[in-house]
Length: 330
Image (cartoon, rainbow, N blue to C red; front, top):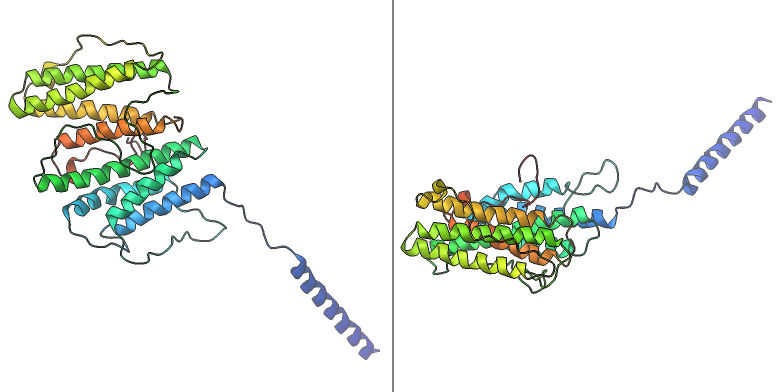
């Protein structure tokens, strides 16, 4: 009797074991949430920012270039790229308890090339994503990369005593953007908003004229050159359909804003920075058709503000995300 009970118990244990094994085999693997298309775009942008971080002197794949351009770009991006990566939310974690792990570098990374890659990738995705918030974030990040890349080259040219003029209309150079300029042939932006832009540029036109009247020689010529560009911009925008021309002949500029060369320089930089911030902020919710000209206009203004200053990384006026407030800054 005891033997039969033992055999029966053994059979029961075997059946339970088989049943348990069968249950495990038939149970489907857990289904982790699949990332949305927007998450994948955001993650790719984060990877581009990480590549820039890796290419800075303290990064894992830095090339250690000692050119003036690379040195200035490194100073800028060592602060800006981590801020953009944080704004992007870091890397997507596909399932619980996994640590994000960006792809390792195949070798020494060129910072200038990494910055250009981030610029073009961000702008290209900004023009096609359906998520307006993500489009704003990517376009702002791409604008910042474009400006830091341009400025680092500008500083190197200045050190080499280049004859490139300080005042010029500068467009954002990226294959991601279609051909165009800082004024559209048509726009879906509210004509009243465009009319405000007309006034902004016309006020700058007047201010530069006052600065020129208080200056002499090369400084005077510089203010007059920028005055002409501001005047042309205001006129072109005023000619868009439905835009009310509210320009005035005289505006107010405080005497202390043009009293000496230092004050005049600060005033000019403020004029351009305000225009840059204005256009960068307008990227928020802008249609894909309007983004290119807004980017060009923001780039031109920010670049001019930078070109007016000393050619050093410390005087660079562009934030990591132009037009976006991050942690209390803008």
